[in-house]
Amino acid sequence: MKTVMITGISGQDGSHLADKYIEKGWKVVGIDLWQPTGRYTNLQTVINHENFTLETGDISQQEYVRRIMLKYKPDIVYNMAAISLVPESFKIPRRILELNTYAVINFLETIR
Image (spheres, rainbow, N blue to C red):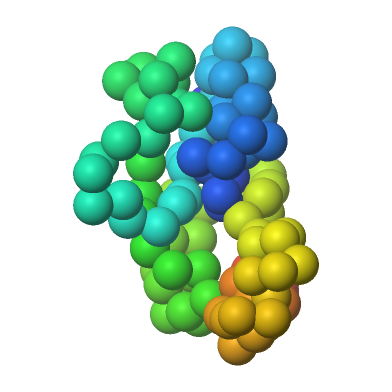
């Protein structure tokens, strides 16, 4: 069975990708930040599916990315995790840089 890894799984685009890959019979590994409420509203159609696994963690941390990639060895990786709200970028510029840039580098270096 092929495996797809999707970061930002609980967002609109990530959850739609999860639906499509589950329909195709793939194993889907979704990555998102931990939610204290445990509610992932956009994942209701896949959260209990046998081919779906939710992993929580911070993809801006290189060791986490390396560990999760080695654990699942995905065939495809979609990075849908990002903060794209311009007003937020002025409030938390360092976090924007970590998530939108360093996280991508972490995946590329791990794949390489």
